[in-house]
Amino acid sequence: MDTAEKVDWAALNAHAAGRPARRLVGKAIAAAGGDRHPGVVLDVGAGAGADSLQFARRGWTVHAYDSDDTLAARLVENERMPGAVQFHHVDIAEVEEFPAAQIVYSTYTLGLLGPEALLETWEKLVAALPRGGVMAVDLFGTNDTWAERADVATLPLHEIDEMFRGFQVIDRTVRDEDGRFLADKKHWHVITTLARKLR
Image 1 (tube, helix red, strand yellow):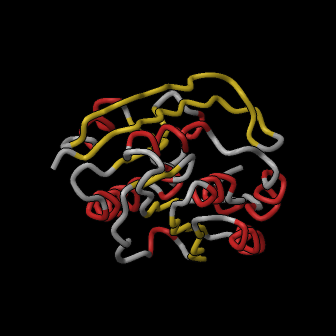
Image 2 (cartoon, helix red, strand yellow; image 1 turned 90 degrees about the vertical axis):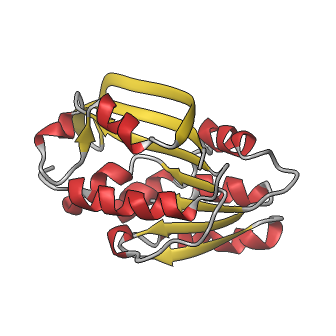
Image 3 (cartoon, rainbow, N blue to C red; image 1 turned 120 degrees about the vertical axis):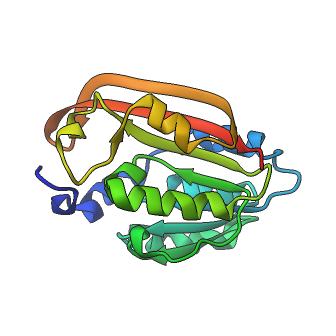
């Protein structure tokens, strides 16, 4: 795979549609104060929607963004959930402004925007969070196979820490291991950060 654009995201997301939500969903909700007063979540790169739907099942209103519309077909499930998912079929890098939210959530997506678009989008996502809002995101580290690609943002830890200036880091996990992406072998270096905005 030479570029992210060559991936058949519709096929990938259709395959992933049955996967359970990540535990990061529950961690983000807990960090944002729990389910007693559910608010708004931005799910950036929602994919097949397992995480978006889990937020909604727990009463949260989700703005789900993705360039693939696999999630749109699943929103009939909204009728059975206390929350709701509003799907935005869009190139994330072209979103001019995100709505205010208590949680910004993004897994395995932000780095695929590329170095320049990542930083521009990051500023908009930080602006969408109030003081006390929660950021729960994956970013690619420099050991990742995709560090060789100019179209993917891979960052050293000190640059990731700089992005979280003005946040209290609550939890951080690092995946640094061999694995696969579709049919290809790949080394994953993914830094997952859960943080609360201080100001």
